[in-house]
Length: 239
Image 1 (cartoon, rainbow, N blue to C red):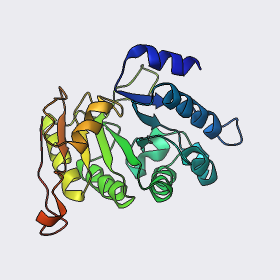
Image 2 (image 1 turned 120 degrees about the vertical axis):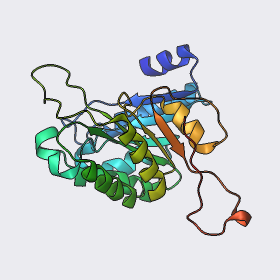
Image 3 (image 1 turned 90 degrees about the vertical axis):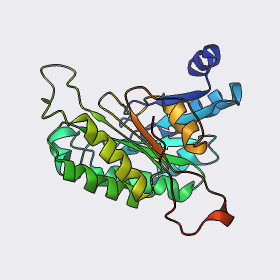
């Protein structure tokens, strides 16, 4: 109720609901998340809803419960880093493989829902590993991806390994589109929920002229079926 009250008072177009890890609950919080989403939608049916979810401890049954008849437009879960850095970067209970399985299953049970994930750079990876990770993510049928610079919250956290050249984000954005992602936002200050509603709108309207400051943004052009020559035709839109 409190969440629905807050959302209703903000006069928003798009809402990202972010969860905390509830591994103390048998379903990792799936039923509670579902109830929150349903209440927000009931109170503000005009909003597009996005959930930035945990990996639900890899529980696919809990995921199915969460997504069943859900009004969600976007289901997001972050892989965080390239596979080889799981142990260095992520909680020991999480992994790239487990995250990919959640994203893949979400698309399987709800093909109408957009799936989305995010990668951090500057935690020890190489440019080539980012490209390889993008291939693995797209192979899981993920629709949207964001890439941004890791910034250490404090001196006690993981040290920043590097600051990639800003032009590299443009390269990754181009790679993502060529791999078949519907939309991508890349930039040093980009985060998984950065201008999430805007990225959602641009993905479904390539003529949208809104801008995402500080980010390379590309989306696939929606071409009428009768104009398609092959499935690889696309146009990039950058802002």
